[in-house]
Image (cartoon, rainbow, N blue to C red; front, side, top):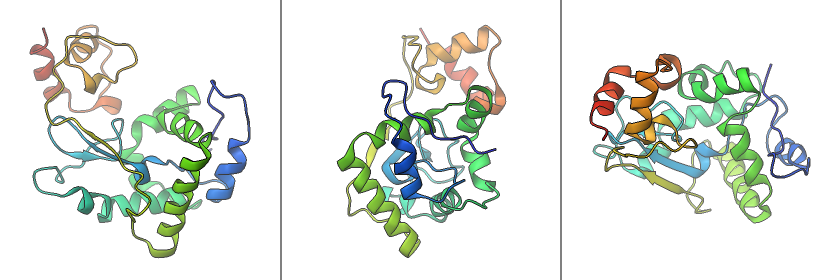
Length: 202
């Protein structure tokens, strides 16, 4: 069953469902981030967001931001998110964290991000225009200037253990997760690399 987009807890207004329904077909597993974010992990590899699994080959060292956003992989991800009959082949690989969270908790980064965005009418209008352009052309268009850049190219070394941060954002959080035995390969992946970074914390 598809996870239903819910109003963000901070906003009791339930009109978000109408906005999403006006944007995509019922049953679509839709997220705004493939249209609105450019993210690069501390190793330089691109991902649709900081919760997504990074690409194996494309990075800031060999691929421009424009080429990444217009890449075959990103276009396939967008197409799957707009297709109510999609098999979610790429979504299941790249967006496994949100899939897991929605199955277990009923909410995720995806649902919260869509919910928050829907309450900014101007921002939502630009998202809709960008999505409609993609539907018409099959290509990503930069005209709406929606891009949020998060390029963590200076590494993840951090001596803080902030609860709201993902483990990939802090070596201290990685260390805590690893030493307490709560690491999950399915969700956070690449335990070898993360363990190496964890040992460098503090």
